Amino acid sequence: MRGLADRVKDQGERLQTRVREVVGKALQSRVGEDPSWDGFLVGLGLKPLAAARRLELSSQGVPNLKGALPIEVRKALDAIRRQSERDLEPLVEELTGPGTDDDGDAEGCIDRLRRDLAELVDREMQEYLVKCRPKVTLSSIFANAQMTSVRLGDAAPDVKARKCTCCGAARPEGTDLRSCAFCGNDFFAVAAV
Image (cartoon, rainbow, N blue to C red; front, side, top):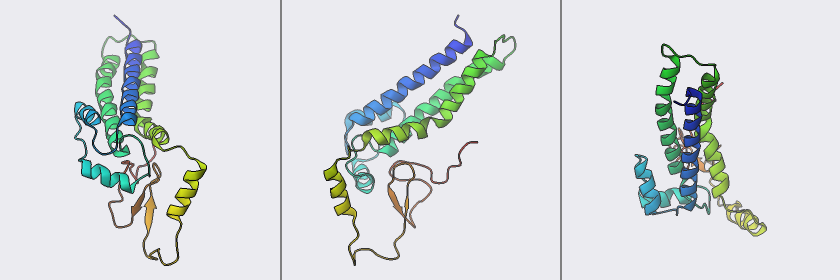
């Protein structure tokens, strides 16, 4: 029988494989309607967004984004994080149960996996957002400047927005500011100490 530390390491490797699968499928997905991505989400026990909602969100967030919407990627990553936490519990019980003779390696492996699980979704979302953004070229810089420059008379002086720290999408004041509608980032999350 394999040692407890080896089984915890195996679980960590399975988790990383699942993360790569989520990100890979998300990057191959099309914004709007993609039956392959929808089937993948359903396989994780998630309900895909309606095509109309996807198009609405894609028009509000990062322009020219390739791949699945960040809000759906976040939900998929969170689903595999929760499953991995459930899968870890029997190993923790085995470690703390009677008759366990461990050299401390398994406990260290469990602690590392728990830390990885705590940071998993935010870390992978940051990496996904980098991968799915279009490459910056000189022409895209000028096009963005032209599109976003304020012209006299265009700006309403009393419109305020909050910028998401994860994806940069603007959220107008007065809307649901607890989380970003585009990527799902929690605006009021408290960093773990």
